[in-house]
Every structure is written in C-alpha cells, then in structure tokens.
Image (cartoon, rainbow, N blue to C red):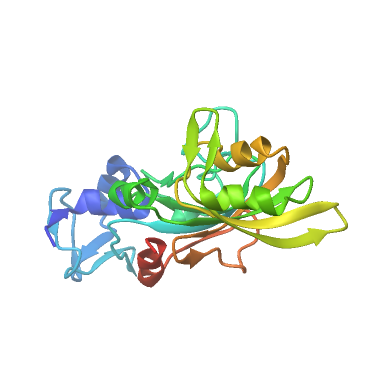
Length: 240
C-alpha cells in the first residue's frame, strides 16, 4: 500500500490526536521493525512494516465495520448534544475518529445498526439503486387482512409517495402483549417508511426491530447496546 506518516498511522489506529501521537514518538515508545522511531514524518508501509507502541504491536485497518444491537432510546447519529448516540455506546477498542451509522434507525427502533468510517461502502448499501434488502420485525396493534398484505407485496401508494414492492409474512401473535408480529423486507429505506405504510392501513406499528442488512443477520449473541467488529466475509455479505 501507499506509505503514510507514522504520526497519522498512530492517530488513526489508536484513536488519539496527531499531537498525542507525536508525544509517543518523542517519548521513545514507538518502534518500526524493531527500531525506535521518533520522527513524526517517518513513512511506514502498513502492509509490511511492524509498528509497536510500548512493545505492543499496532495493526493497521484502513476502515472499521461494526455491528451493533441498538437498544431503544438511543439515536443513530455520530454526535448529539442532548441524546445518547450509537457512537457513545461503542467500547473503547472500537472507537476511532470518523465513525458514523450507515443508515438511521429511529430513536425507539432497535436492532442491527452498521457503523463504519467507510463512506463509499455506506453509500453502496444505502443507495436506492443498489436495492440492498433490509429485514425487520414489526409489532402491530391488529392483524392485517390478506388484501392489506397484498398491498405491501404489490407496491403501495400513500398520498403522493409510491413505495416499491415489499416482502411481508406473518410471524406470530404475542398473547402477552396482544400484538401481531410480521417479518417485512424492504429495499428502499425511505424516511419512516414502515411507519407510514402500516399507518396507511390503519394498523400502526408499535415496535420495530431491524434483523438483517443484505445477506448479514444481527448476531444473536449481541445484547442490546453491545457491538463487535465484522469479519471481511461478513462485510462482503452485507451487500447481498
């Protein structure tokens, strides 16, 4: 790969400022291929050079791709002055500058949020032209009729908005909450799309959870608020 300055390398991988990276260099804590490095402008090849800080190896990742099980009450944003964000929930080892949620879930919507610092990747999975499917579980106040589910499958017009065909299947009835659950897959992801579609049928949704993006399902071992890095294979499967 193209070589980058050692201070930029350290800043991006350790989630520290360039100033703090230079302090590590001046303090003699950084080595490159076993040799002490103290010059901020020293070029390193992240694929070939072995960089360590305090004797601990520092690997290089150009981008991060993170799966989070978003809890209710948290906003899908990089920062917010008044609300807790999905970025605030990230554990320290997964924090770095430039991370953002690739697509928003409403504050009270739960489930799979993909967090990354790769803008091109996020554009690919969010672009309507890509038609990356996203699957949700929807809790409704009443059961839908066959005719209503066919409106989903055939494409629904609400006011001046025409929604593309969606996949919808009954999931189950929850007697404890007196709610009907549906599995819905959409490929557009317009603002408040599912809320608008269900409200237009007179069956307002009362809860919403995202289960899958493309070919990747939410890891069932992640508790609400927990996150983990995706494997390269999982990153590829997100695009379907």
